[in-house]
Length: 96
Image: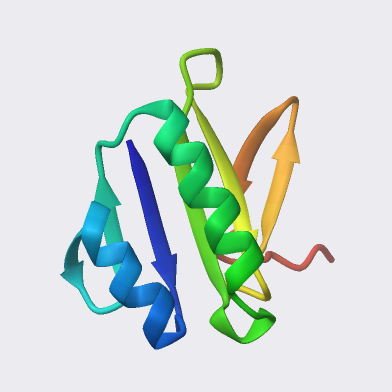
């Protein structure tokens, strides 16, 4: 499975994404394509989207932790990695 959440995809890329994905909400794409197709889709997005697209790609994997997160440009939320587990930072807490 692959989920793409973007801020602003180019129209040509968005049209191409509609071939493989369901778009339940604007610039949110979900698909259950096979792993090989998912890899091609991720590479296509990374090569055809500018930093202005700002998005996150969640791709399922068969090995732990079960998913991979990639970013397109500068997404609204940051990522961090803790013990090999990729996480999305919701809110950064300031320490005193």
